[in-house]
Amino acid sequence: MLNWLARYLKPSCRGPGRNQMLKTLILHFFVLLLSLILPKAYAAEGDNQQQRFIEDAKKEGKMVFYTSVETEFARALTSGFEAKYPFIKTDIFRSTHEKVLSRMNVERKTGTYTADTVSVGEFETYHLQKMGFTTPYKSTSASAYPEGFKDPNSYWTDLYDNLIVTAYNTTRVKRDEIPKRYEDLLYPRWKGRMVLDQNEDRWFANMLYFMGEKKGTEFMQALAKQEVAIRGGRSMVTQLLGAGEYDLQIVAYWYRPYLMKKKGAPVDWVAMEPAIVATHPISVVHRAPHPNAAKLFIDFVLSEEGQKIFVQRGRESARTGLKPEGYPSHLKLAPSRMQLAEKLAEYTRRYESLFVK
Image (cartoon, rainbow, N blue to C red):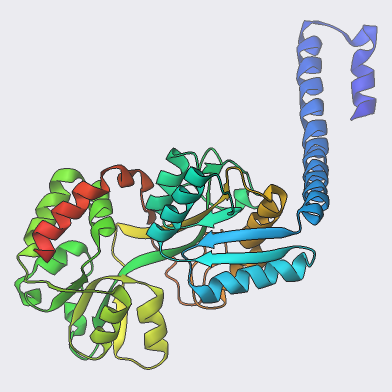
């Protein structure tokens, strides 16, 4: 290419047509050159940044994780992190979404900042970001997460998620009865056979968003007329479904009926669109006492190595190309809209007035 370029630079070869061709050739040459140089430069910068985090984290020596994730997973994540970075010791505060948020509120008021990273539900994450509890950090794994599973301004990335499906008892539901879409639940044959957890207000909010307010409201009003049973505790409801107390559970987290089926329970599931996914984001805490250790932790848990901690236990990851065995691949996923948190109280009131009463 360089020899050809040299020939075009000779005065005898110049002319209007050749000058334009020369400009195009030079442009293509520099584009090619940049495409070869920039990735290496970015990679080197990323490596340098990671090394700086490591050196500074060694001085910090600690990382505190506030979370609502099950204790099994929280400990597996921190143990894996400590194995990778043995100079960092970790502490966990594990509680419900609401109690984690409440504790951070109290700590802010008293000026006692303890948490370095926080992972709670998507609605709580929305409030944490809005109230200034979290700070942006673009993880080294951010590019592996699709739109909707990470914040465009890098305030959070999905740590793990839960696909919402409809579960049913295989001994009580005939194959030709299995619903293919939510509207099928309005057929007369389902009256008095279905169950919902009493706290499905977030599912309710998302359904109205993705269906559209008018269509969604009409669907929910019709569904409420189907004499849907209400019980407390989604996990317990799935167990009752397997015991034959109910025929169909309208809202279940995919992994529960899937794992029950693997163990021989008469339970199966069907995914219907909108295929709502409840996300569980993770963020760096604003004014974290150990900010460099916090960034290393987030990079670790979002990496393939960290995400396999969930996937190998049958749980779901939003990371591209990393799904547990049996996960449906044909669905167009609809990540829960965390902005709906603004009107959650109103959605809760409407849900309870229709179903809980």
